[in-house]
Length: 167
Image 1: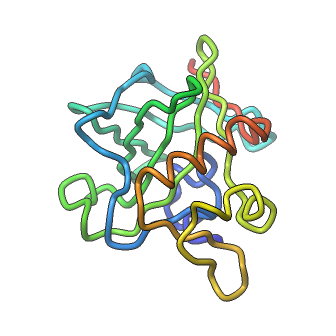
Image 2 (image 1 turned 60 degrees about the horizontal axis):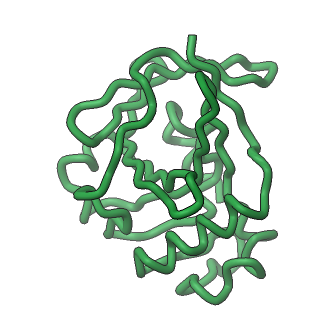
């Protein structure tokens, strides 16, 4: 559940990797969008973590200091965005990486992240997930359409768990 904690720049954005795919990016780069403006985003918690967001084409690089991650966003039917995150080199070889997923809604200069929690969301998304990890804390997906349905359901049912404000 905490694999993404090692991907420092986006750890707070996608804390935990609770929705995950192995060796396959399940969001389509052809329909990816870049709704986040480049710049520095600061978390609203006591840590005030600063993330630098820049985009190149349809990919984002999200960095905290020298650590960087690749991020891709695609629109969901409910106005939110599906987000995929992995180590920075994965933008070049997306099929060779493990990807973690979350949902982001935008509100002016704020990005409101909803972080899936497989332990509590598996009942909500169970019809779409492929398998659960042995301890039930990671929902694995193998189908992009099912993943997007699961993310849309999470976006509709759960409040944002982290807010980022652009400076």
